[in-house]
Length: 115
Image 1 (cartoon, rainbow, N blue to C red):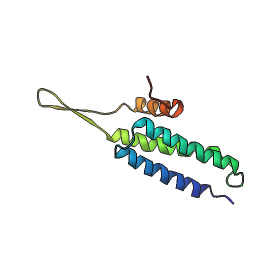
Image 2 (image 1 turned 90 degrees about the vertical axis):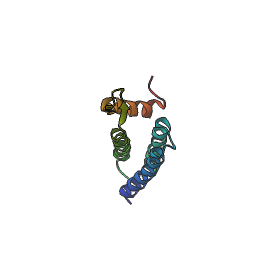
Image 3 (image 1 turned 180 degrees about the horizontal axis):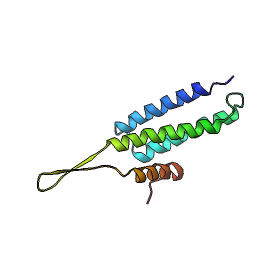
Image 4 (image 1 turned 90 degrees about the horizontal axis):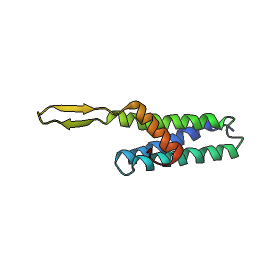
């Protein structure tokens, strides 16, 4: 029996719920990304032990990673920093997309903030 779609949907729902906690400031970047990694690795380990469930567990693992990273990056892109200057003008600073991409990958692979 192939239930990859059901498993993928369930794990994405779990990641979405975790992301809501992150957005509500209940988790910091490191906690959120490390929890996502644990969820994805646990799913991968389960699928590899259940050969009858799916043929390509690595495809699901990669897809879940991409999904979680894109979800997180969308949040970062939506956050703008407004800085008031002394002359009354407001400067809007957008996050650096390349750095955010690196930042997520670094925490995901190293389990800590980049130095």
